[in-house]
Image (cartoon, rainbow, N blue to C red; front, side, top):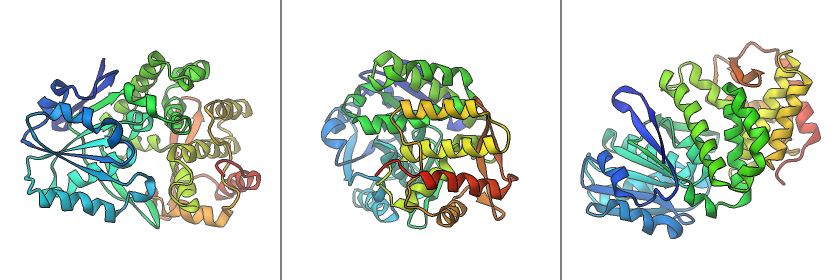
Length: 365
């Protein structure tokens, strides 16, 4: 087992990474302050892992709630079912919520924990590679709105994160590929050596080799921890973690939540960001080709959906929470392993990027 510590003062916490961690009481016990535990999972994950997870909370008053599965259910309405359960169970301010699932479960459970009685503890047990390398770390929580993804939320750090690679055995191939977009992101934004490692080891990751998976999760979490420790509330450098997300959120919202997986949309978004960077004179054609090849090698889409129009795409990007002052702030690569948050690009070049990708079309059908 590998352990990474995210140092955030009184909000610091460990991230445990390894095999067969689910159900180990000694990992979670130091981070539970009361006797009441509510495990939040979904209808896909619960039949597979809820029984095993319950073993870690033997001796506590442990209850569970099962949510429907899918991004389309990350809504205020579904959030309220968690509040209903907490209130009906008469859980107090020392209760602990446990997110057992992927990014949707983690986001909505964390937001419920941030809001219930103005803030209670929660623990992340991510069961998808995407959640293990990204959403479970850093304290971003929230729900979607029909007009924008993750527009309603809060920063609320977990007490600990348990990333058990054993659960990835049940992850289907499409979900595995989707998560690799976020892994590639870390190499692209700030870790050129990791990007090179991914070019050499993508086949091993797709084959789910444990050693390769642990290395990729550890390196991804380490890269994210370094950024979050400097900028917990995304007032500065943390925004680089959104590489590809402004483009990607526009795709997800435009085609309807659930049709494109989050990682698929982010992968295409990173290529659109790379295209704009090349137009700005930062990336070479060779750099863009390397990014394109790696995303393609991960079995991810490399073009935006053809049924979105340029003006519609721009409108959706303008709604993104990273837009401010009437400008769309984008995370753009200046080189492989180096990125910046930029708002002073030529809007005409952004339109050229959108038109180029939308004209070709493709991706998830």
